[in-house]
Image 1 (cartoon, rainbow, N blue to C red):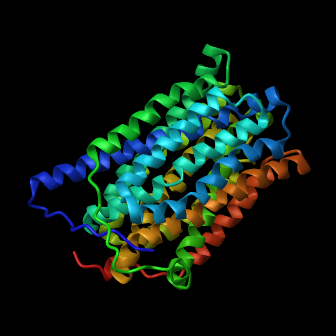
Image 2 (tube, rainbow, N blue to C red):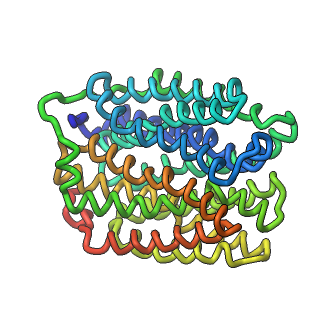
Image 3 (tube, helix red, strand yellow):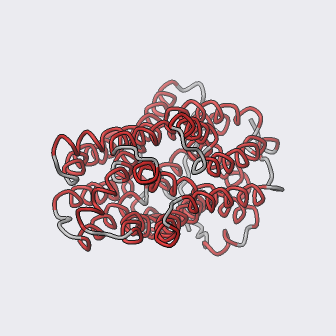
Length: 408
């Protein structure tokens, strides 16, 4: 796949610094919208299932449809970006995402229509990771990359908090699970307009093609990608099934179940910012390899605790060491390696990283629903997620820490 090339802005150029700061803030807002659109669904899954008479597996397929198209859109979006440019592709897919969230509220009158609109929305949102972080890697100097990624990833926490907090109140205020999606269509369309207005296009080089197969054969990239799959698996299980677990197995109401999951964002945002900044100074590897066993522990403990205080503490601990805090380090670690060893393949490598890692959502949500159907409990899904976090740790062993290789 061909890649985009943009000169790193000079630290002395105030105009460029201002643009980088504005870009980081805008991409943070973009993640917030992507996540609020996505996470407002999860507390409502039990309502939707009851309204449409769905089994656990069928309910899991709603998220599965979203993430199937989310994943499927990533590599085509990367190829399209070679022709249209990163900015234009970002704007185009943001509009598709907005159409999907609008349709989720307006035309999802039965189960098949619901799956179709979830798929359209997922296809639109699927390009965001690749486009946003490809632009970031080419624009933000390496010495600030962890910090910038931490700020951008803060949008995930903001969107997570807003989506989980708003789901119950909006549902109770309107009496319809469709109304929240109609409301969220407005900021989703607005983000597409802001990207068009304020993001600069990244010039595309057409001189060299980078086959995806070549990136898959790179053992360092392959292990980074598979480790990311393991990290994100637990996140999607917790995010999509956590509210349902709290409602059904801990007898917590709809609004409170969303608020319980929201506490992840409360601790993840400062943790991600701090760890991203710290990783710029001491490297990504040591921090990541400390986080993953702790991540596994929090996922294993969560279905064991019975008290509300214990659940809150487990969720807060996951926020500190979980996916949202890991994200700035994971993408910066990948960016460090690719920009140094395969600079012509940044766009392709980011797309592949996102593609493989988010495959975990396609697998995790319906598999956890099936575990519930078979065992009568969601606990087994959390244990599988904890085991995979340890597999992610094993895959990260021996990977290079490019901090010592990179130039300041």
